[in-house]
Image 1 (cartoon, rainbow, N blue to C red):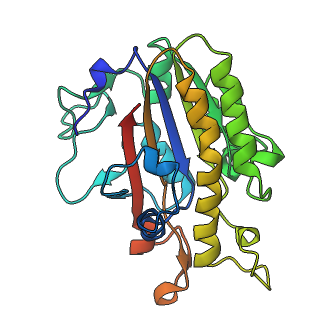
Image 2 (cartoon, rainbow, N blue to C red):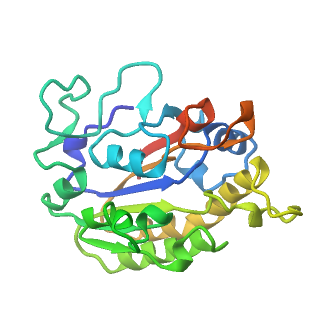
Length: 265
């Protein structure tokens, strides 16, 4: 379905969730196995859409996202949801909401949105000059140690913060959440882990944990006065030894192939 963002911007909340480091193959396998009941409320009957990430690590991907370059459709040409004005763009159409501003966060703020960032991984923790760049795009930004990668209950804490923000805002909200639970370390989601080693099993179990907490956000959105346009995707995948590769910030299908969904709820 092709959404016309000119009919959505200004009338609906916009919720943008990045599931940091989530691989497409793991996401789709868990959906097919019926292990993502809460994500399934948003997903189509075919499950996650596979798209290509614009970057191989968090910082690069999110700069692209906030400029309107969301994960790319495969294999056909994509009409973008949002775009900052750029002469000669072949992916901008009459369904695209085009901003004069240099990023969509500022653009949505100038359209009357309360822009809020709930950080997760280190690029959002505001503890260094570099980790302030992305959060400072937003009118409000939040990060606490319990939102980060070392807390096994990070998603619970992040979504409780999201619930608080939604419950106390009367204006349209552009809420961005960088979910950190999948990013290393994630071994603690696997009770069978003996040597504190992240692997494909703990990666999948981290996603099951996130799904179990998603109901916090879904219930908060149901209580809002207006509908919400939800974008949920990974920013990049990662490798666990496939073809000799480990981690991300490298060129491998398990890094570039990521899950994506968009839905007006």
